[in-house]
Length: 307
Ligand code: BG6
Image 1 (spheres, rainbow, N blue to C red):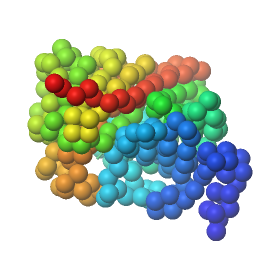
Image 2: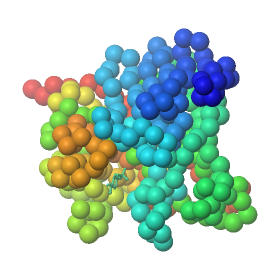
Image 3: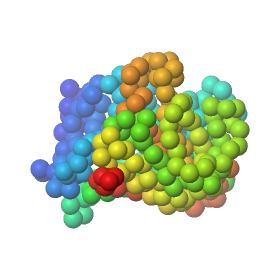
Image 4: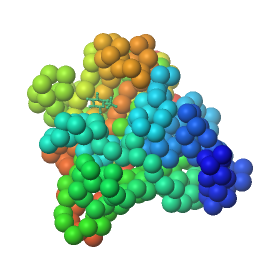
């Protein structure tokens, strides 16, 4: 009942008739549904989690696991988890949540704006007792997702305190693919990476990436556009970025898929994560009063048939 009232108030404040509505989604979690002439999209307040983007006349671009948890204490498996303010395990605290607290925090709607045929949904969080339990910084983070012919994701972090702080961030985007075994990921030729499946050894990428086993790599010092070619679905996804100097490429493959309780055993061929990040040696230092904005821009096109 309480949630129904809250949803009705959110619709009153932020809904756009025929284009944006706020509804109860999976597990009763509140989500924003966008249906414009350019695209359909979905975004949960839980984790500010984008779970769907479907440009008109295209298939769904994002992967969400059929086994995902849908409750406010667990991250959603798929879509775009927002990893902040650390990535992976927190270096100085083994008990801290993996990939930071942002992906399991309740975000608040700030605005929903229609510009032409695109719709931008903005959500925010601010430091409070629950964030300070893990991380002492005073901050405000605004996350904007624009659903249009492109998917544009922007994470904007402001230092609202009196002390400088460092943070890591990742837009942990799960792309849906027709067959991981025929996918090619290009744009990272010659780039050094840390291989997390091989004790984080530093290696250098040679040519395009083909996924032939568990893949978990942090590509270093790269702002390059990454192209994901997926012949099985006949499409190419281009991921451009701004103010991001690392890229993570991840597929769990067979054994790790089986070990994850919120991921189907046979779902690994259907997805790949290409993550727009600032992690490790690219962590961000933010002085009081300053802000940092990282952006990912995703575009889909048809793959030209090979002759
Ligand atoms: C990737 C990491 O970004 O996320 C992997 O590089 C990790 O090491 C994966 O396994 C999934 O993390 P999680 O916490 O969502 O299971």
